[in-house]
Picture (cartoon, rainbow, N blue to C red):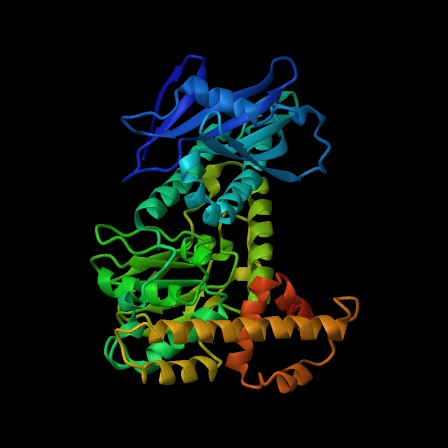
Length: 492
């Protein structure tokens, strides 16, 4: 994957990352504040290209720029600041995450940054949240490694774990691979309906009616996040484009088609992504990465026509925070990275039917993440809806090959977003914009004609994207209470 090369002049160590295809990233850098010399670059990661857009000296200069003025930083302990620089005179943009950390017993300010050409600004902006989320989690784990690398035990200074640079290399390489794959296989901003299932003459031409209905419904119920898996790249990509019709243009640019020449790994943060099975007809989903996704995910297998979905948004967020916290606690307690076993995976094959149970009883010896033992993270689509069913029945009555279906789709999406905005206003009025608890979900369902559970799930998922936290505000209290009751019963 990567090979180290000798430090360049000025003496900054550099690792070249071998990528498949073009990379939109110029480099990633790790810099720190030296109390005597000021901002210094500790390491550079760059794609292994024949043509370098910037010299190592220029990259070092730009990386130093990210820490200028941070000597007076007064952020709270543990805070991570996101800085976005556009340096027109250099023709680059820099996304930098500033944080405090301890290394070799000294506390200092650090910056983990990625550098892109300014010409890639429109490509990068839809992926900004994905990038920041990935780098943020790298920093959370990196802080622990920085503290653990040199730890004084009695009078002996003992090296524990891997070096921070080695750790960062293993984490930054997948980020570079993600950007490279998005550059080559990212979904375009405007998806043509003629490239999707909705262009078929009849609803059953490409796939079964109940499968298409369930796939679109679950896709909307999980905030537009889906993984499409199959053996045929054309079939997978057709479903990917179909689901992308129900996303905004920016969300489509944060989606990825399947690669016919080889399968990608699952990447958290993308809205829709197509993935191919291997020669044995199976695919591996890493449990850890699934839990990192900002929204719950729908799993769609186009080979066997199955649709599974994760728990609702408020449960997913609770599980995610619980898992991430447990992971960091485990990482802090282990003696070295050798104690960590490879990421727990979810195996899926042609006979995939059922409940995907995940058991990660022992991520590391003697440390048990009990909450996730035998936890079923993918379930059947429980709630049927009338919104998507009515839409599909009507759109296939329109003549294919004309723009009429596109207009009908746009009208359907407009109705959904209007309903979501109405739900938000209804809740704001009932709670005085969050000052009072929300009392009656039954009244909301009756007043807004959302008595069908599937319809409510779709509209609440859209409302969650418009007003983050709304899902937990409405459903969270009862869920947390049930979790607490379960924990009490299990402790008896």
